[in-house]
Picture 1: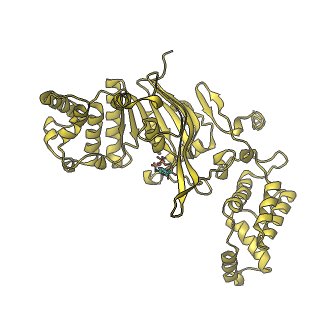
Picture 2 (picture 1 turned 180 degrees about the vertical axis):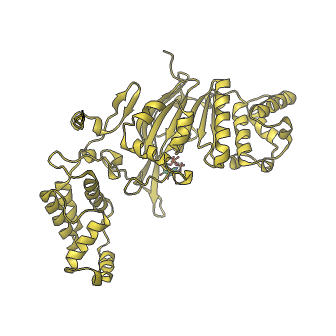
Picture 3 (picture 1 turned 135 degrees about the vertical axis):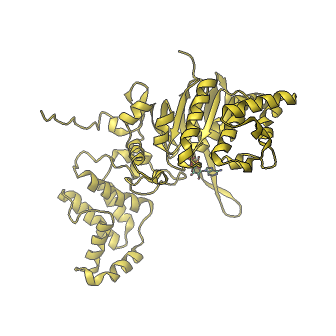
Length: 432
Ligand SMILES: Nc1ncnc2c1ncn2[C@@H]1O[C@H](COP(=O)(O)OP(=O)(O)OP(=O)(O)O)[C@@H](O)[C@H]1O
């Protein structure tokens, strides 16, 4: 086996959070928090996840456009982190970045020909006519005319500009293209043509492509392998077919479900998930996805309907991470008094259950009793006590343990405790 073209190990990028006029550092945004993957020559790896999960930061850090906080990057066997200025310049020629917004990546005062030729000039090609010949050849290869070299960026549509950006990336004969959401800013109707162009030039130039996207549908079309990111970490990685047919992480399953949404603009809304994307400056303990995971694991002595269990966890997580605004809730419930029966506190507790989609009675009396005790503490304005009751009654291994990567199949792994033998679900009995 040959070595991968690009090898990333435990890549980490933290940004300082500062506050006050002295700008004292009060924390760190863990934008990328120890990701590892390999990319072979000629291969396309999709890096996929919701907005804000750290995809662009990962791209910038591995290309050393920003200095990583920690980790290793090897390109063609060489240690990128140790590169000096000259080596970095050579590396930047072999590894090209394409951005989402083609408009902002061009100088409006330069002709398209000048823009595309710019990297050649920067890298020392003095011969003007040679530069011109290379540029016109490339413009034609990406589906434009040689004459377009004399026009200006504003004369082109978004899709055409992305073609020009691709020509500019190809002009220095790279081995790797990092394409950061290359079609997200384009009309859906022209996305496919840009993707197929990317595919054909990839084959022609035997390029490795790191394809960054939030859209699993697009990833399925163009990628050989997929790495799924959540809150700075890779939670699943494997061949595209394996990940799509047999996703090993509940987050991946959620992303896959989002493909089915008819409106592509809605595809980044993961409607099956409760709660918002947590703050990467304060990621949840254990599995970072446990605050939203529909498959979060119950303690051994509990067997609630999974939706009810998720709902109880939502209350727990909400009180743990955000607390509760009791005064507004009382006001809200006060306004509803004519429609409700019971004392204020009873109605308040009922309203909280409704808010979190918890039935009036949980099927497990002990669990229901514990939840009721916690809600009693909430209406007494003792959130601390409520938190303690919920933490004691509803612990989850997903909060306690940081999951390792478990093998799903050849070269396919997922960081989810559901694959730990301690929590493997009993195989369901066959019907026949
Ligand atoms: N320079 C910076 N300083 C502080 N925080 C940053 C900086 N750049 C990015 N972040 C934070 O790091 C996290 C990851 O951002 P990043 O842009 O890498 O995510 P992304 O997955 O590429 O999302 P998008 O597709 O929206 O760009 C976000 O919480 C973002 O706010």
